[in-house]
Picture 1: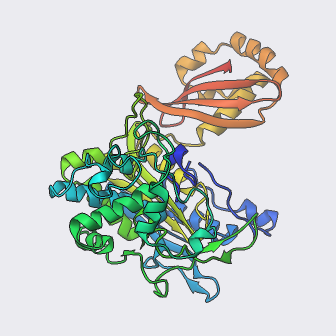
Picture 2: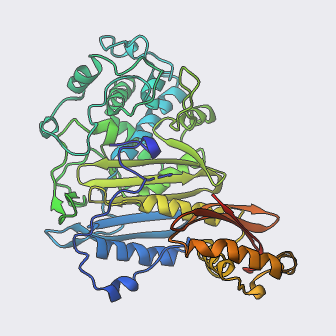
Picture 3: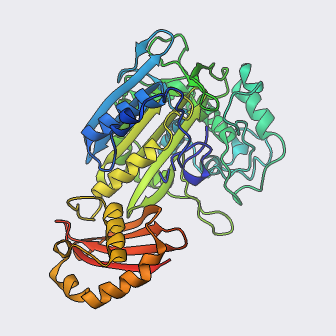
Amino acid sequence: MGPFNSLLKINLALALAVALASCWNDGLGAETRATEPTLDTFDPQKIDAFLNAEVRQKGRVGLSVAIVQQGRAVLTKAYGKRSLEEGIDADVDTLFAIGSVTKQFTCACVLLLADDRKLAPTDKVSKYYPGLTKADKITLLDLMNHTSGYPDYYPLDFVDRRMQRAISPDELIREYAGGKLDFDPGTKWSYSNTGYILLGRIVEKVSGQSLGRFMERRIFKPLGMHHTRYEPEMEDKRLAKGYTAFATGKPEKVDPEARGWLEAAGGIYSTPSDIVKWDLGLMDGKILKPATMKLMTTPRELADGRITDYGCGLGVSVRNGRRVWAHTGAVSGFAAANSMVPSTRSAIVMMANKENGLGGLPGRLVALMLKDESAVPKVAGRGADEVARNLFEALQQGKVDRTKFSEEFNLFLTDEKLGKAATRLARYGKPLKTEVLSTNERGGLEVTRTSLQCASAKFVVLMYRRPDGIVEQCFVDEE
């Protein structure tokens, strides 16, 4: 049940990190692979085709997605199988385990009680569990921010022998929050599921209700999340079956963690469509008051002044100039990712019923969405990486297509300059690897920095392009 971003066990590179995708059935011929859909723009139809191919060709079992852009649903669809053994297709109402995406709901429950003045985020743990280690020094906010120092009871990515037997939340809390701390409270950030089990029990003590009942009454029903369940019975036919695969092997059905091990840290099953309702409710301020909402989405400052990239149950970062709230989830047989862009009321929710079943897809889609919603103008024609590579090779040959350049750049790039550039660059040979390093806007132009790796040197191409694709500037420097 890893956290978000570089601090996650399983990720989105937000940035979200790329995990290895299983390719057990990739026995396709070269001709088939050559026709696989590509994904280079944020086009719902292209995304649909791409995801369909990903599930069909890469053994992802089942996948469900919901995408909202500017507050409007642009794609809601499921792919693959809910159950391989029964041959049942996944659909948009299939419930998937969301793992640690649960944590944002748990934090919202704590903050709702704070809005009700029934507790305070600054309350010490000792107020509710006086016997725990340094309970008089650790606050509820420390638990939500992962800065308590309590050891994580679930640090690995598989169900070990402990988690094959049921445990009560209080037994778990005594065992993992009653011993030695990993560090002094507030001095470091370290992902801890233990703190969230503790938060769930505190919500139950203060509210007088089970955590599931509290979530249902205060969050699920008000937002119309009719397909969301906390700790459901595994016999529920709406639930997808979870799968795992080792070392690119075929997916195998896997048992879930025993009762008591997930709960407030990762016990929710839901659908992407329901989670999108939560996202919009959170972004629109329909759940929490402004003060608690700000607390939930503010990165924690540690005792030495360092800033984490985590608020309360949410990773918080800035990408392409926009704030992103996000979290991934991973429990036995499942993977999930929830990303929100509050400034544009946009969100991407993905779920899979296979461990590592999302790979780098969430991060890739978020990056495309942010690019689509940025101030950078859309440029007609080929991508910046391909154009930069072609221009570099043309400079090496001393022959360029001047119809692709603006009048001013043609005047700047004299035949003399072109000839000298060819003499200097030709000896490096063609680029072996191309990567766009950055994209931004200036003067209504697309500005890109592209890395070109040759055999013996690396270059950076700084290129300015108009929306019609005309190059206003193209400078080459050795990196």
